[in-house]
Structure formats: C-alpha cells, structure tokens
Length: 525
Image (cartoon, rainbow, N blue to C red):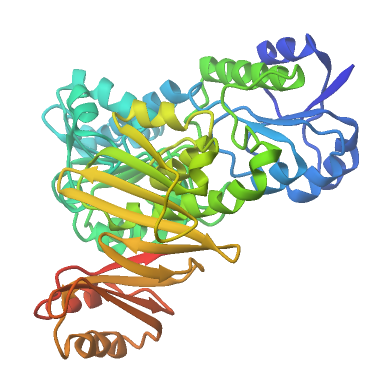
C-alpha cells in the first residue's frame, strides 16, 4: 500500500479521496529537519503554501512519485529538483479562482468606504460619520493588470457595479477582452486613467516591483490600489511614500513581499487595509483545492495522467537527446518576443525547421508558450495545459514543420502577430548552447546569459553608433559586446548592445531623441 504525507491542514474531502489508494498520514507543524527525516517513507506529498519542499526534501524522498500543492502558486516547491528526481508536481490552479476574485472585490469595497477603520472607530465609542466619507464604485474605472483566470472573474463581476473595466495584458486577444466587455490599453494609459487598480500577475523576475516610483508617479491622486496576487509585484517602500505624500488615496493588500510581514510600514498606515493572505480562504475554495490536488495525486499513483501537471509529461527517451537542449531555447525565444513586441497579440506561429521537424515537438510548443505567457499567466504553463491556456486567452496557435533548413541543422522560429504588426525571433542550438540567430528580418548571434541587451532599430548612417555610446557612457554603463545587422548600406539596421546593467527610462528617452533612432528596448536574456 502506498503512503501519502499531508503536512498542512486540508479539507477532509481530499483526505477521503486519497485514502482510496493508500495510507494517509497528517503531520502538521513539522520542522524542515523533521520533514527531511520522514519523507523517505512516502510515495506522495500534499502541501499548501507554508511547507518548503526544498531540494533537500525531494532528494530525501527516495520513494516520492508526486508532490501536490493544494492551491495555485508553487513557489514553495523546487520544481527543477522534482523534475530531476522524476517526481511529478501538480497544483489546483482553478479551484480558488472565484474566492480570489471575490476577495479582490471585497477589498475594493472596503478601501472605497473605509469600512475597517469606521468599524474600529465605532467600537471604540465614537460616532464620526463625516470622518469616513467614501466613494462609489459606480461609474469608476477599474484597471486590471493581468487578465488571466482571476482578473477575468473580477471583470465579469464588476460589470454589475456599473464600473468601466480596462486591462493591460499583452497576451490576451482583443476578441477575448471584448467578450468580457473589457478595453485593452497600454500600461501607461491604465495607470493614468484608473480610479482603482488591481493586480493579477505571477511573481517573476520581470514583474517584481512592477509598481514602483515611476508607475506611482503616473496615477491619479484619488486612485486606490488592490493587490491579492503576489506581494513582490509592488515596491512596498514606494507605495508607502506615495501614500504619505498623498499621491494616492489608499491601498488594500492581501499579500506581502515577505510573509508574514515583519516591520512592514504599510500596516501602520490609516490609508491601508491589509488581510493575511486570505484570497483563497473560503470554505468552498478549501474544499475545491483539496479535492483537485487529491484527485491528481491519486491519478499519478494509479499511473494515469494528472490534469494540472507542472513538470510533465517527460520527454520520451528516444527524443530526449535532441529535444532537451531545445526546450530551454524555446522558452528563451518566447521571452525575447514578449519583450520586443508591441500591441495586443492575436496569433502565434511556431515553425520547426531541419532535424526538429522529424520529431514530436509538442514539448517545444509548450516551452515557447511558457516563455511568451509566463509573465501574464497566473498558471505555470506546461505540456498539459499550454494549448488550453492559449485558447482561453483567445490566441490562435499555428505550427509548421519543414524538414529542410538552409541556415542551421535545426531552427525554431516564433512569430507573434499583434494589433500593431508582427515580431519574429529565431533560435538554434550550437555546441550544446542556445543561440538567438534572427530578430525580425536581421540575422544575429546572441547567447542568452542572464545579461541585459539594448535592442535598437535605426538608420545605418555614420556617427549614429557613437551617439548611442555617448548615452551609455554618460549613464556609466559598460558595453560588453555589440552587434549591428543591416539589410543594405545606409538602410534600416538593428543594433544590439550587451550591457552590464540595464539603462534607466531617462536614458532610453535620450536614445530615442537621437535622430534616426526608431526604437530602443532593454531585453533580459
């Protein structure tokens, strides 16, 4: 009989499901050392958000087949270690969607009408109605940053409140947004016109501190900020300063950069409403996440495919030697497209040329979509759900195979068509290393190495490169390498500078003010 370990409280409904296939042991409050000491006896592990499933825990789990997360985020699980160990990681990405959406709206009402402070004031024996005059939600503009599962449910519900809803999410089709009666706008427009702003994004390197001093300088002084997604999305110090200076009216947060928050200045401010990460804390959501996670654990233990696998299915052994190096390349290619594109995406084309065309490339399709969508999707994208997530966002994905390739033995090309045009990026693997070899119509050779790159479209003319160098020099930022690709002499060209540090917005504006410089974007590879 298999053994399943549960380390945090979950609804009994899920426990009963798992008891159908094995022995379920509930051991809450264990220290990391205690978990490492006992995990070797178990075939499956079910956690929520507090248990840290580290590499040490996974390596000690000699029998471990599956790790279940009763919830959405899997930040507390070392996915790479689990994959290397051969343990499948599953979660419950949809089970608490409604709970999170409703909590967002609850906080929006609370911050608009000063409900917590008014309640506390009344209980202290005061009757000061004039002190707590609020604002109505009707006819106000709600800006949603991220239009995934939770953001979409929020949009559906506030229609009944007669709010205007706008959103920023590059990877949502205009048709999908229109069906929700949501207007897609740029990030800057959302910040400048919204009366309420709600965040619905995952925490990634590029979304951390997404709302910082620059963004808070753009908002109305009457705006109210709501965050039920991830604490890392907002620069908490910048938010405090904006509140202190009266540059925003209030904030409601359910999540913090560090949880539980220690000496967080937000908690001492009257303009802030805070809850202890309650987005998924409803009776219904707890039951749903318990059932969803338990069913998938049972499926894996029975040898069946789980519905929401984070790191499966594994690449077949016969194709592993070829596809494995291209999986990382596919993700990077998608990330480059995301950082260079403009407008709203409507369709995605993925081409596989050369040797790759002979194989089942579904894992590469999932990897490309992960690179494209990981900054806007609340779900971790994998082979199981990649196509579903793209379809849910109204994106058409087309794949092409061509066994011939003139430039390289194998080539992956990703083209995203948007409301403003299209962007194409190609990549290959050389000497076991990923290379970006084409951007738009230009052939280049970039090795993703975690560094910052300046991409600039410009007119090929004498002196222009020197003018760009003057800007980076004045910014005290070193250029470690440079590439220039052109279609013809004195025609359009693409310059790519590898930088030790990213340029600030003010430096980007200086570059764009140089005659014949058309675009300037920082891309992290």
